[in-house]
Image (cartoon, rainbow, N blue to C red):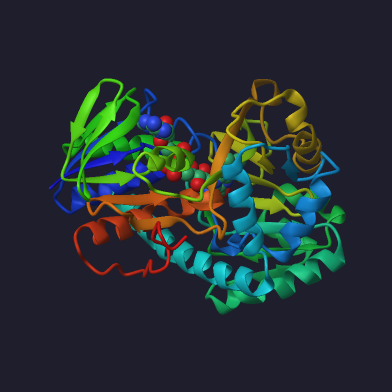
Length: 416
Ligand SMILES: Cc1cc2nc3c(=O)[nH]c(=O)nc-3n(C[C@H](O)[C@H](O)[C@H](O)COP(=O)(O)OP(=O)(O)OC[C@H]3O[C@@H](n4cnc5c(N)ncnc54)[C@H](O)[C@@H]3O)c2cc1C
């Protein structure tokens, strides 16, 4: 079967790889000249079942209300006139009950564990090196009450099969010596030994190369504008360079699956949630964190890819705006300088902002919509790197008419 994968972010490229393994003829389309040039470009790099809590929770609702009046929080809100936004926001708010947050968290964790196994298999079969670190992650707390509450909250992760241990500041410093000089600032940490990190952009670009070597056609720099349909089938994707006909299509355009899906009458509740990152080159005299983790009191995440260290923060409801200003990074820089003053070469920092494709229940949209040969694999929110290889295999299984190992029931476009 000829399958056109629309989107060459980490999700689209991982899907292309799985489709090739199933023996399909694959063409991948992306508007950018290189894969992973949008949200998969500079994310936090964490593969973290140990941090897979649902963002839509009772606490998020309270933070959102406070964010209407303050701008220094990890969650920021800018007023938006779009009806699509308010529809999405209402659906997000409806997911913020304790019961739904617990259910969504269990499912997120389960998908993360499955996907992590799939990622390990893809890395083993391709030999891709993308700065992977597999010695766990540390979630740091400055106050004893915060640590105790987090330890209690982690029960749901433990119930879902994730190992999470409470560790003292001394134990944290033994796991990662970068904390030795600052360990007095912490009450302790939660340590998730199974969590990992790696560079999603490097992985995606290397995997795209492997796809091309296996016969996939990469049509880069080509924008999908619309579709030609016949009855309940999509015949071709109409691009700015012509038409791409295929037997089946996979919509993996990240946030943009929503506006492009609309052309097919699909209502995909995906809204961009902006985040910011700083990438520092690491040289001989630097002392970066060795393990990935999160400074939970400042909600900033970090990961070490060997030659670079990545710092990320902030969830901002700011529409479809990719821009960033120096002041957006100020709180993150302050927290990072306190913790890791020698992390990397600050004078050569690369600043970036990206849009997380977020759904109201924070789970991805997987499955078929109203057209029987078009599959959606989008809406991975803050977990797209963690989930990419899992949802890619699930999509390939669905497309082949096989029952996936991980059950995606309820994640179909219509069900969201
Ligand atoms: C600050 C930040 C930190 C994050 N940290 C983590 C983390 O630690 N762990 C984790 O698992 N996830 C993390 N994420 C989330 C993760 O980065 C995303 O979920 C993931 O990158 C989404 O991948 P995607 O392939 O769906 O989307 P994208 O990477 O955005 O890919 C979509 C592709 O579609 C293309 N496209 C769009 N419209 C068109 C069109 N009309 N025609 C042709 N091509 C088009 C784009 O060019 C793009 O290449 C983070 C995100 C952010 C912003």
